[in-house]
Image (cartoon, rainbow, N blue to C red; front, side, top):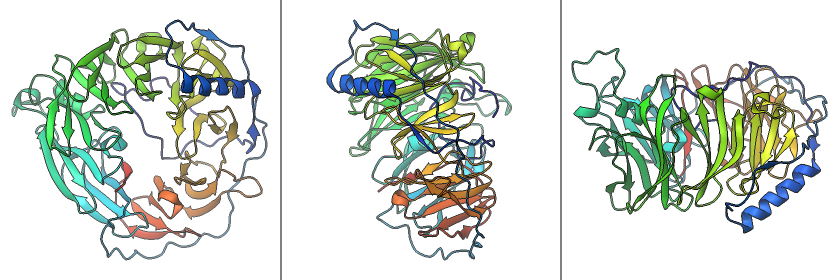
Length: 523
């Protein structure tokens, strides 16, 4: 595994990220067993109780408990079965519409930050069709552009590849209708007609296209977005789908970026920068929360000592976790809890860290830190209320994230993927074969698929006696389960395939597609 790179997600600024879908380097063998750490279990119980019953207390003091670490046993990892693979069937019958009941897998075909094709397909692989042909600006995270319900996806188009004529659009499925919402830039905030084509776009256009600039409200009826069509900088707006009205929430000199709705849909946290560097960090100037109804904006804290802010998530309707990118301090630093209504900031972890994630339903939080943090390296649980941190395991994770489908934290370590429950249980996830990527989970089940040098299917219960099985021989760029595991869709070398239970034998849907981002859209 390559050395951990503290700047791995920082290509000019902070932002949310998607789970890797491609192959990973070969990993050492690990066990498929469970480890229960009594200290971690006790800490997790305290965490769940305090989050349920308490609010943030300004009088709490920072502290770190004695180390409580137990290593998983190194046993043989499940090896994929080697039965003869079925041959993909001929191109499937694509007749039929996108079904009203959904859901629909939507994906781009193209390369770079611009694509000209958007496709959609039913969960069983039927109804495949190109639904858009336009110059689409690819968002940093396609999930940010997708409503939680209603079959809606917001997307940004450009008049040319110089980021002129940016426009916000709304796609509705299954009919594929498109509503043009508003221009996002004006003549004063985009390149002029005689500008050098090699020159970088103006800062407002960069803020809208290079950063996270779209966010749906929890109920899917409002869309927060950044726009620079009424002034010299990108500002925060809300589009109300029911009223078909746009409300401007902020007006300031900095470039607004990264809108994040509070769980109750009342506040939108966002950040501001006066410069958006091309790899050298952002010139951060502010962090604010805006009332979604337009009644006011609250200044939260000064982020100017860092080069970008990494939003982790919400632990309550008014409290979120964030940490900072600081090139001067060598990477990501200082996990904090911030009150979105008052601006109160509490340090949870001071110093270096590699990544952090939280379970929004319980507030359980873990992070990975190396020796540069001033502590022994490893994966730690952090209680956001007591600020007590406990080392769960001494393995270093290059990334950690919360999987709502597995109800586990997934940590990528040098010896494989770990699943860590909010209660402190550690599970070695199966390793089906060389080059396998992070598992994709079928929502509501424990079925798992691995894309990489091949395609494997298994479950959280896979073991050396019941290993994952290989269902496709060839490089797979991405795979998605239909909700409930009722089918899967995957892309291999430009060819789109689908498979149905119980055998999931692949059938070819279409050739000649280009790998890019994808997401489910729900009715």
